[in-house]
Image 1 (cartoon, rainbow, N blue to C red):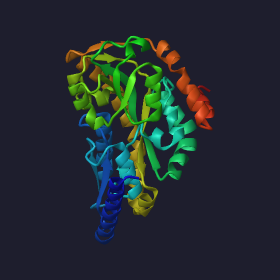
Image 2 (cartoon, rainbow, N blue to C red; image 1 turned 90 degrees about the vertical axis):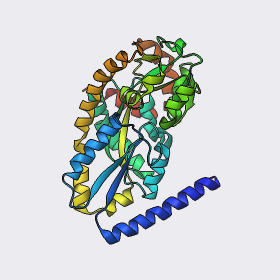
Image 3 (tube, rainbow, N blue to C red; image 1 turned 135 degrees about the vertical axis):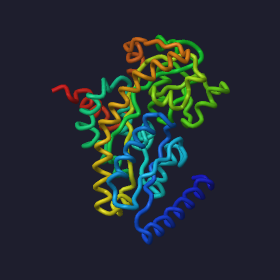
Image 4 (tube, rainbow, N blue to C red; image 1 turned 120 degrees about the vertical axis):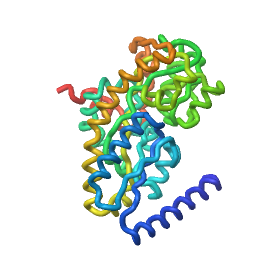
Length: 330
C-alpha cells in the first residue's frame, strides 16, 4: 500500500469518526449518496428519485443528499468510503466484479436478454448467491438498480463486426472481465475513470468507449464521438450499497423508510431506462452521430472464450452462468 493511500485512508477514518461523533450528539443528519453519473444520466435520475421519495417520509431532520459526477470520488474510492463509513450510500456497477469474483457474472456478453430476464436473474441468483458474497466483503446490498445495456462509440469507424474493433483504443471501466472481453474482440482496452473519458476522447488519448446510452448522453460524449454502434454487448446492473455497521446503527424508523423506498424505486429505474433508450437514441442521431446496429452473433462467438475463462477461474462460475441463463424460463 502506497504512503499516499495510507494517508488517505487514515484521513477518511478520522473524518468518519468525527462525523459519527457529531451525528451521535446532534441526532438527525445528512445521509450522503455518492455516484459517478452526470446530471441527466440514469444514475442521477435514479438516485434523485430515491432521495425525493425517502425525504418525503423520513423523520424530521433526516435527509438523503445525492452527490453525482464523482464529487465524492470515483467508484473505487466510493467503495473504500463505504467501508470507512464516510459515505452512507454508493451505486457501484462494473467495479463490483473487481471487488468480488462472482460479480463478474454480469460481465459475460449477451447474458441478460432484457429487463424482465434481469429481474428473474435478480431473484434466482443475485439475492441468494451474490449478495451474501458482498456482505462478507463489507458491502450490504439494499437494492438492484440499473446501469444498462452498453454500446460502443468511437472516432475510427462504425463497428459492424469484431474485426472493426481492431486497434481501437477503447476506454473501459476498471473491471477485469470487461478488459478481457475487448481484448478477445480485438480492441485495445484502456481502463479509465468515467470522469476522465470526455477529455480522453477530446485529446485523442482514446478513440472510443462503451457505455449505456444514458451515460453517453449525460457525459456529453456525443460531442466528441463520430460513431455509435448499438452492440448491446453487456447489461450491467447497479447496486445500492451501504456499510453494514453504519446501516445497523441507524434508527429503526429511518432504516425502514430507506429500505422501502430503495427497493420500491426499482420500477421507476427500469421504466426510465427503457424510455431513455428510445429518446436518447433519437437525440444522438439529431446531433449528427452516425448510428449503426450490428448483428450480435459474431460478437458472441468471438467472446466465447471469456465465458470459458470465467467458468474456469471462479469456482461457482459455471453454475452461476447456467442458473442466470435459465432464470425465468420455467
